[in-house]
Image (cartoon, rainbow, N blue to C red; front, side, top):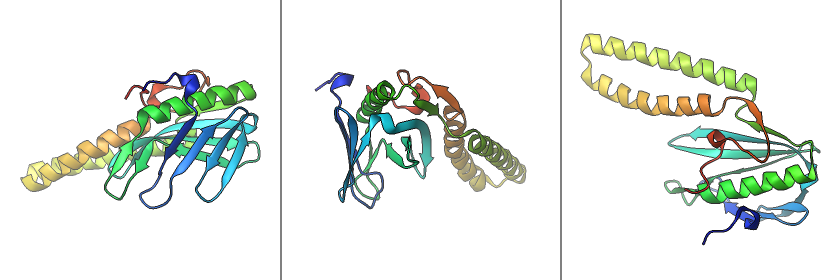
Length: 195
C-alpha cells in the first residue's frame, strides 16, 4: 500500500541485534518516542538541528538521523531493523518517508532548524585521512605480496580491499559535511524512498 508522505506517521525499528524496538509516532504537535520502557514527547519546535549520515558498520551499511533538541538531548534513529545477530533488514522506504515528513514538520514549527548532512568537519577530515592512509598501506602490502608471489595473500587482501574500499568511499564521499534545506535532504545521506 503506497501512502503519500503526509500520511506517514509512524516508524519502528530495532537498532541493535540485542535490545528492544523503538517506536516513533508523528502527532500533531510533537514526535512521540516509545522505547518500550517509557514514552517521551518531543515538540517539533524544540528540535534545534538534525544530522543525517551514511554509516558503514561491520558487514552492513545504513543511514542514521540524529535530532538535537534545544535542551541538548538527542534522539537517534536509523534504517536498520535487527531481528537477531545474523538477520538485519534495511527499512529504506519507511525510514526515508518518515525522516522526510519529520524534517518537514520540524522546519515548519522551528524556522531556525539547521539540517546537517554528513559527519562534522573534523571527524570527516580525520576519517578521510585515516581511510586514505590505510588504503595506501594496503596497496603497498598488496604490491609487496605480488612481487614475492604470495598468491593466497594477494587474493585475500584484494577481497578485503574491495570491501574496505567500498565502505571508506561511502564514508568519505557520502558524508561530506554540508547544510541542506529540510525540504530537500541529500540522497547521499537518505536512502531511496522507493526501495
